[in-house]
Length: 391
Image (cartoon, rainbow, N blue to C red; front, side, top):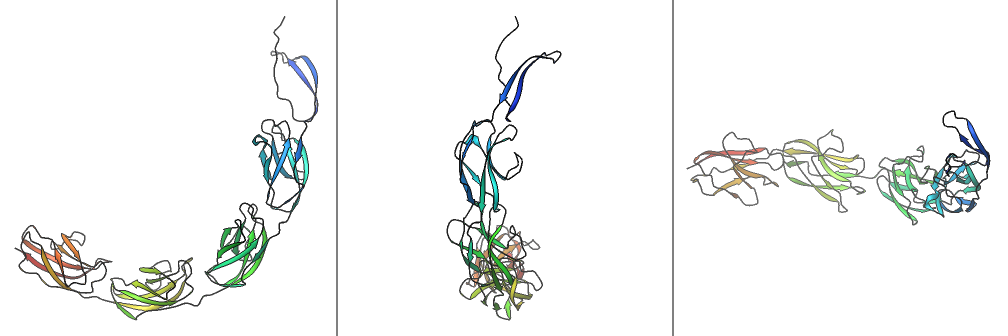
Protein backbone atom coordinates (compact mmCIF):
# COMPACT_ATOMS: atom_id res chain seq x y z
CA UNK A 1 0.00 0.00 0.00
CA UNK A 2 1.07 3.58 -0.56
CA UNK A 3 1.67 6.16 2.10
CA UNK A 4 -1.29 7.89 3.78
CA UNK A 5 -1.53 11.14 5.72
CA UNK A 6 -3.30 14.43 6.34
CA UNK A 7 -2.63 17.77 4.68
CA UNK A 8 -3.93 21.28 5.33
CA UNK A 9 -4.72 23.75 2.57
CA UNK A 10 -5.80 27.38 2.36
CA UNK A 11 -9.32 27.42 0.93
CA UNK A 12 -10.57 30.05 -1.53
CA UNK A 13 -12.32 33.05 -0.02
CA UNK A 14 -15.05 33.20 -2.69
CA UNK A 15 -18.03 30.84 -2.29
CA UNK A 16 -18.74 28.26 -4.99
CA UNK A 17 -18.14 24.64 -6.07
CA UNK A 18 -14.56 23.42 -6.15
CA UNK A 19 -12.56 20.14 -6.26
CA UNK A 20 -9.80 18.72 -4.16
CA UNK A 21 -7.38 16.94 -6.52
CA UNK A 22 -4.50 14.53 -6.08
CA UNK A 23 -1.80 14.84 -8.76
CA UNK A 24 0.95 12.50 -9.94
CA UNK A 25 4.18 14.36 -9.40
CA UNK A 26 5.85 13.09 -12.56
CA UNK A 27 3.03 13.32 -15.11
CA UNK A 28 0.86 15.93 -13.38
CA UNK A 29 -2.15 13.70 -14.04
CA UNK A 30 -5.10 13.88 -11.69
CA UNK A 31 -5.16 10.56 -9.85
CA UNK A 32 -8.09 11.36 -7.55
CA UNK A 33 -10.58 14.11 -6.91
CA UNK A 34 -13.35 15.01 -4.45
CA UNK A 35 -16.00 17.74 -4.69
CA UNK A 36 -15.91 20.64 -2.22
CA UNK A 37 -18.54 23.31 -1.69
CA UNK A 38 -17.23 26.62 -0.26
CA UNK A 39 -19.82 28.72 1.54
CA UNK A 40 -19.47 32.31 2.60
CA UNK A 41 -18.48 32.73 6.25
CA UNK A 42 -20.87 34.23 8.75
CA UNK A 43 -19.97 37.90 9.24
CA UNK A 44 -21.81 40.52 11.28
CA UNK A 45 -21.13 44.24 11.49
CA UNK A 46 -22.37 46.50 14.25
CA UNK A 47 -21.94 50.11 13.18
CA UNK A 48 -23.93 53.36 12.87
CA UNK A 49 -25.62 53.95 9.52
CA UNK A 50 -24.73 57.66 9.54
CA UNK A 51 -21.60 59.53 10.61
CA UNK A 52 -20.19 63.06 10.50
CA UNK A 53 -17.51 63.71 7.89
CA UNK A 54 -13.98 63.29 9.20
CA UNK A 55 -15.02 61.64 12.46
CA UNK A 56 -13.94 58.27 13.78
CA UNK A 57 -16.55 55.55 14.18
CA UNK A 58 -16.37 52.36 16.23
CA UNK A 59 -17.26 49.13 14.41
CA UNK A 60 -18.10 45.90 16.21
CA UNK A 61 -17.83 42.69 14.20
CA UNK A 62 -17.88 38.90 14.26
CA UNK A 63 -16.11 36.92 11.54
CA UNK A 64 -13.46 34.23 10.96
CA UNK A 65 -10.75 36.86 11.38
CA UNK A 66 -8.42 35.13 8.96
CA UNK A 67 -4.93 36.42 8.43
CA UNK A 68 -5.00 39.80 6.71
CA UNK A 69 -8.79 40.35 6.97
CA UNK A 70 -9.72 44.00 7.40
CA UNK A 71 -12.55 46.49 7.76
CA UNK A 72 -12.87 49.26 5.19
CA UNK A 73 -14.89 52.29 4.16
CA UNK A 74 -15.28 52.44 0.38
CA UNK A 75 -17.31 54.12 -2.31
CA UNK A 76 -20.35 52.20 -3.45
CA UNK A 77 -19.63 50.01 -6.47
CA UNK A 78 -15.85 50.03 -6.00
CA UNK A 79 -14.09 46.69 -6.11
CA UNK A 80 -12.69 45.00 -3.03
CA UNK A 81 -9.27 46.30 -2.12
CA UNK A 82 -10.13 49.87 -3.17
CA UNK A 83 -11.01 51.85 -0.07
CA UNK A 84 -10.78 55.24 1.61
CA UNK A 85 -10.01 53.97 5.12
CA UNK A 86 -9.15 50.57 6.57
CA UNK A 87 -8.09 48.78 9.73
CA UNK A 88 -6.90 45.18 10.17
CA UNK A 89 -9.20 42.86 12.12
CA UNK A 90 -6.22 41.42 13.99
CA UNK A 91 -6.60 44.40 16.33
CA UNK A 92 -9.83 42.83 17.59
CA UNK A 93 -13.41 43.95 17.87
CA UNK A 94 -14.42 46.74 18.07
CA UNK A 95 -12.24 48.61 15.56
CA UNK A 96 -12.05 52.36 14.82
CA UNK A 97 -12.27 53.75 11.29
CA UNK A 98 -11.85 57.34 10.05
CA UNK A 99 -14.82 58.56 8.02
CA UNK A 100 -14.05 60.45 4.75
CA UNK A 101 -14.19 64.26 4.71
CA UNK A 102 -16.48 64.29 1.66
CA UNK A 103 -20.23 64.10 2.22
CA UNK A 104 -21.98 61.21 0.44
CA UNK A 105 -23.03 57.56 0.39
CA UNK A 106 -20.41 54.92 1.21
CA UNK A 107 -20.12 51.29 2.32
CA UNK A 108 -18.65 49.79 5.45
CA UNK A 109 -17.10 46.44 4.53
CA UNK A 110 -15.53 43.33 6.00
CA UNK A 111 -12.90 42.32 3.45
CA UNK A 112 -11.00 39.05 3.11
CA UNK A 113 -7.25 39.38 3.41
CA UNK A 114 -6.66 36.73 0.74
CA UNK A 115 -8.20 38.20 -2.41
CA UNK A 116 -9.98 41.33 -1.11
CA UNK A 117 -13.34 39.60 -1.44
CA UNK A 118 -16.09 41.64 0.26
CA UNK A 119 -17.78 39.28 2.74
CA UNK A 120 -20.14 41.83 4.26
CA UNK A 121 -21.19 45.38 3.40
CA UNK A 122 -23.48 47.91 5.06
CA UNK A 123 -24.47 51.37 3.81
CA UNK A 124 -22.92 54.41 5.50
CA UNK A 125 -24.16 57.95 4.96
CA UNK A 126 -21.61 60.68 5.66
CA UNK A 127 -23.09 64.04 6.66
CA UNK A 128 -21.63 67.54 6.74
CA UNK A 129 -20.54 68.66 10.22
CA UNK A 130 -21.85 71.88 11.71
CA UNK A 131 -18.97 74.36 11.48
CA UNK A 132 -18.82 78.12 12.14
CA UNK A 133 -16.02 80.70 12.19
CA UNK A 134 -16.54 84.04 13.96
CA UNK A 135 -14.01 86.89 14.23
CA UNK A 136 -13.53 90.61 13.60
CA UNK A 137 -14.05 91.80 10.03
CA UNK A 138 -10.89 93.94 9.97
CA UNK A 139 -7.42 93.63 11.50
CA UNK A 140 -4.00 95.28 11.31
CA UNK A 141 -1.32 93.55 9.28
CA UNK A 142 0.80 91.20 11.38
CA UNK A 143 -1.49 91.26 14.40
CA UNK A 144 -3.02 88.29 16.21
CA UNK A 145 -6.75 87.73 15.80
CA UNK A 146 -8.90 85.69 18.19
CA UNK A 147 -11.13 83.29 16.24
CA UNK A 148 -14.25 81.76 17.80
CA UNK A 149 -15.19 78.52 16.08
CA UNK A 150 -17.43 75.51 16.37
CA UNK A 151 -16.78 72.22 14.65
CA UNK A 152 -15.95 68.56 15.14
CA UNK A 153 -12.25 69.16 15.94
CA UNK A 154 -11.36 66.00 14.07
CA UNK A 155 -7.76 64.90 14.00
CA UNK A 156 -5.80 67.30 11.78
CA UNK A 157 -8.59 69.90 11.37
CA UNK A 158 -7.18 73.41 11.39
CA UNK A 159 -7.99 77.12 11.34
CA UNK A 160 -6.35 79.18 8.61
CA UNK A 161 -6.03 82.68 7.20
CA UNK A 162 -5.69 82.57 3.44
CA UNK A 163 -6.20 84.52 0.26
CA UNK A 164 -9.67 83.81 -1.22
CA UNK A 165 -8.10 82.20 -4.32
CA UNK A 166 -6.03 79.72 -2.29
CA UNK A 167 -7.01 76.06 -2.10
CA UNK A 168 -7.80 74.46 1.26
CA UNK A 169 -4.31 73.04 1.70
CA UNK A 170 -2.80 76.53 1.24
CA UNK A 171 -2.67 79.23 3.88
CA UNK A 172 -0.71 82.23 5.07
CA UNK A 173 -0.90 81.04 8.68
CA UNK A 174 -2.73 78.17 10.37
CA UNK A 175 -3.24 76.46 13.71
CA UNK A 176 -4.85 73.14 14.64
CA UNK A 177 -8.47 73.24 15.80
CA UNK A 178 -7.86 71.56 19.11
CA UNK A 179 -10.62 70.86 21.57
CA UNK A 180 -12.17 74.12 22.64
CA UNK A 181 -13.88 76.96 20.85
CA UNK A 182 -11.19 79.59 20.32
CA UNK A 183 -7.89 79.93 18.53
CA UNK A 184 -5.44 82.68 17.61
CA UNK A 185 -4.14 83.33 14.12
CA UNK A 186 -1.33 85.64 13.03
CA UNK A 187 -2.53 87.91 10.22
CA UNK A 188 -0.56 88.45 6.99
CA UNK A 189 1.75 91.46 6.73
CA UNK A 190 0.44 92.49 3.32
CA UNK A 191 -2.77 94.54 3.35
CA UNK A 192 -5.68 93.13 1.36
CA UNK A 193 -8.73 90.87 1.41
CA UNK A 194 -8.38 87.44 3.08
CA UNK A 195 -10.48 84.65 4.56
CA UNK A 196 -10.58 82.98 7.96
CA UNK A 197 -11.28 79.29 7.44
CA UNK A 198 -12.04 76.01 9.19
CA UNK A 199 -10.37 73.29 7.10
CA UNK A 200 -10.78 69.51 7.36
CA UNK A 201 -7.76 67.47 8.38
CA UNK A 202 -7.81 64.74 5.71
CA UNK A 203 -8.68 66.33 2.37
CA UNK A 204 -8.34 70.01 3.33
CA UNK A 205 -11.99 70.75 2.57
CA UNK A 206 -13.00 74.31 3.46
CA UNK A 207 -15.92 73.67 5.81
CA UNK A 208 -16.45 77.30 6.88
CA UNK A 209 -15.05 80.67 5.81
CA UNK A 210 -15.58 84.34 6.54
CA UNK A 211 -13.90 87.41 4.99
CA UNK A 212 -11.43 89.62 6.83
CA UNK A 213 -9.78 92.82 5.59
CA UNK A 214 -6.14 93.40 6.54
CA UNK A 215 -5.10 97.04 6.81
CA UNK A 216 -1.61 98.54 6.77
CA UNK A 217 -0.31 99.60 10.20
CA UNK A 218 0.56 103.19 11.06
CA UNK A 219 4.31 103.17 11.68
CA UNK A 220 6.95 105.86 12.24
CA UNK A 221 10.54 105.91 13.44
CA UNK A 222 12.86 108.76 14.41
CA UNK A 223 16.27 109.37 15.98
CA UNK A 224 19.04 111.98 16.09
CA UNK A 225 20.36 113.14 12.67
CA UNK A 226 24.00 112.40 13.55
CA UNK A 227 25.73 110.11 16.03
CA UNK A 228 29.27 109.10 16.89
CA UNK A 229 30.58 105.78 15.65
CA UNK A 230 29.98 102.90 18.07
CA UNK A 231 27.56 104.77 20.31
CA UNK A 232 24.11 103.59 21.33
CA UNK A 233 21.26 105.86 20.24
CA UNK A 234 17.67 106.04 21.41
CA UNK A 235 15.06 105.44 18.71
CA UNK A 236 11.46 106.57 19.07
CA UNK A 237 8.83 104.63 17.17
CA UNK A 238 5.12 104.12 16.73
CA UNK A 239 3.73 100.88 15.36
CA UNK A 240 1.73 97.73 16.10
CA UNK A 241 4.51 96.06 18.13
CA UNK A 242 3.60 92.70 16.62
CA UNK A 243 5.48 89.57 17.62
CA UNK A 244 9.16 89.87 16.64
CA UNK A 245 8.83 93.34 15.07
CA UNK A 246 12.14 95.15 15.53
CA UNK A 247 13.99 98.44 15.17
CA UNK A 248 17.27 98.17 13.29
CA UNK A 249 20.19 100.11 11.88
CA UNK A 250 21.22 99.26 8.32
CA UNK A 251 22.83 100.62 5.19
CA UNK A 252 20.39 102.29 2.76
CA UNK A 253 19.28 99.89 0.03
CA UNK A 254 19.82 96.72 2.02
CA UNK A 255 16.78 94.40 2.50
CA UNK A 256 14.87 94.28 5.77
CA UNK A 257 16.53 91.06 6.95
CA UNK A 258 19.96 92.71 6.88
CA UNK A 259 20.98 94.88 9.81
CA UNK A 260 24.07 96.09 11.66
CA UNK A 261 22.28 96.13 14.99
CA UNK A 262 18.68 95.69 16.11
CA UNK A 263 16.34 95.48 19.07
CA UNK A 264 12.89 93.90 19.30
CA UNK A 265 10.18 96.44 20.01
CA UNK A 266 8.41 96.38 23.35
CA UNK A 267 5.25 98.16 24.49
CA UNK A 268 7.25 101.20 25.54
CA UNK A 269 7.85 103.45 22.53
CA UNK A 270 11.65 103.65 22.74
CA UNK A 271 14.46 101.38 21.70
CA UNK A 272 18.23 101.62 21.41
CA UNK A 273 20.43 100.59 18.51
CA UNK A 274 24.19 100.66 18.33
CA UNK A 275 25.92 102.66 15.62
CA UNK A 276 28.62 100.97 13.52
CA UNK A 277 32.28 101.78 14.05
CA UNK A 278 32.66 102.89 10.44
CA UNK A 279 31.46 106.45 9.65
CA UNK A 280 28.92 106.95 6.85
CA UNK A 281 25.26 107.30 5.96
CA UNK A 282 22.84 104.77 7.47
CA UNK A 283 19.16 104.49 8.32
CA UNK A 284 17.10 103.51 11.33
CA UNK A 285 14.15 101.23 10.49
CA UNK A 286 11.00 99.69 11.88
CA UNK A 287 10.89 96.16 10.41
CA UNK A 288 8.02 93.64 10.52
CA UNK A 289 8.61 90.41 12.42
CA UNK A 290 7.32 87.89 9.87
CA UNK A 291 8.61 88.88 6.45
CA UNK A 292 11.01 91.68 7.37
CA UNK A 293 9.06 94.39 5.58
CA UNK A 294 10.55 97.86 6.16
CA UNK A 295 7.50 99.72 7.43
CA UNK A 296 9.30 102.98 8.35
CA UNK A 297 12.80 104.45 8.05
CA UNK A 298 14.78 107.57 9.02
CA UNK A 299 18.30 108.61 7.89
CA UNK A 300 21.22 108.99 10.29
CA UNK A 301 24.83 110.00 9.68
CA UNK A 302 27.53 108.25 11.71
CA UNK A 303 30.57 110.45 12.38
CA UNK A 304 34.18 109.48 12.98
CA UNK A 305 35.38 109.00 16.56
CA UNK A 306 38.60 110.37 17.95
CA UNK A 307 40.66 108.89 20.74
CA UNK A 308 43.95 109.81 22.42
CA UNK A 309 46.39 107.61 24.31
CA UNK A 310 48.91 109.40 26.52
CA UNK A 311 52.36 107.95 25.96
CA UNK A 312 53.51 106.20 29.15
CA UNK A 313 57.03 106.85 30.43
CA UNK A 314 59.21 105.02 32.90
CA UNK A 315 57.68 101.62 32.19
CA UNK A 316 59.79 98.90 33.75
CA UNK A 317 60.01 95.33 32.46
CA UNK A 318 58.11 92.94 34.72
CA UNK A 319 55.94 95.69 36.27
CA UNK A 320 52.25 96.45 35.71
CA UNK A 321 51.67 99.96 34.33
CA UNK A 322 48.88 102.51 33.91
CA UNK A 323 47.80 104.08 30.60
CA UNK A 324 45.78 107.30 30.44
CA UNK A 325 43.36 107.77 27.55
CA UNK A 326 40.45 109.82 26.26
CA UNK A 327 37.84 108.74 23.76
CA UNK A 328 34.27 107.46 23.37
CA UNK A 329 34.60 104.51 25.76
CA UNK A 330 31.96 102.54 23.85
CA UNK A 331 30.89 99.07 24.94
CA UNK A 332 33.81 96.61 24.56
CA UNK A 333 36.29 99.24 23.29
CA UNK A 334 39.71 98.29 24.60
CA UNK A 335 43.36 99.37 24.81
CA UNK A 336 45.95 96.75 23.93
CA UNK A 337 49.73 96.32 23.79
CA UNK A 338 51.41 95.09 20.58
CA UNK A 339 54.78 94.58 19.12
CA UNK A 340 55.14 97.20 16.34
CA UNK A 341 53.41 96.05 13.13
CA UNK A 342 51.52 93.16 14.76
CA UNK A 343 48.00 92.27 13.64
CA UNK A 344 45.07 93.41 15.77
CA UNK A 345 44.39 89.90 17.06
CA UNK A 346 48.01 89.42 18.16
CA UNK A 347 47.97 91.62 21.26
CA UNK A 348 50.25 90.96 24.25
CA UNK A 349 47.77 92.24 26.83
CA UNK A 350 44.61 94.35 26.87
CA UNK A 351 42.06 96.08 29.11
CA UNK A 352 38.55 97.29 28.35
CA UNK A 353 37.97 101.03 28.52
CA UNK A 354 35.61 102.13 31.28
CA UNK A 355 34.41 105.43 32.68
CA UNK A 356 37.81 105.76 34.36
CA UNK A 357 40.44 107.88 32.58
CA UNK A 358 43.09 105.13 32.72
CA UNK A 359 43.52 101.37 32.44
CA UNK A 360 45.96 98.98 34.08
CA UNK A 361 47.96 96.69 31.77
CA UNK A 362 50.00 93.61 32.57
CA UNK A 363 53.73 93.76 32.85
CA UNK A 364 55.92 93.15 29.81
CA UNK A 365 58.78 90.75 30.40
CA UNK A 366 61.33 92.07 27.92
CA UNK A 367 62.66 95.61 27.40
CA UNK A 368 62.06 97.17 23.98
CA UNK A 369 59.73 99.33 21.91
CA UNK A 370 56.02 98.50 21.94
CA UNK A 371 52.78 99.99 20.67
CA UNK A 372 49.54 100.92 22.44
CA UNK A 373 46.34 100.99 20.40
CA UNK A 374 42.77 102.07 21.11
CA UNK A 375 40.57 99.44 19.43
CA UNK A 376 36.84 99.84 18.67
CA UNK A 377 34.61 97.20 20.27
CA UNK A 378 32.62 96.06 17.21
CA UNK A 379 34.77 96.20 14.11
CA UNK A 380 38.15 96.37 15.89
CA UNK A 381 39.23 99.53 14.13
CA UNK A 382 42.34 101.34 15.39
CA UNK A 383 41.16 104.74 16.59
CA UNK A 384 44.48 105.81 18.21
CA UNK A 385 48.02 104.45 18.62
CA UNK A 386 51.27 105.46 20.27
CA UNK A 387 54.65 103.82 20.76
CA UNK A 388 56.44 103.57 24.09
CA UNK A 389 59.61 102.11 25.54
CA UNK A 390 59.95 99.43 28.20
CA UNK A 391 63.23 99.72 30.10
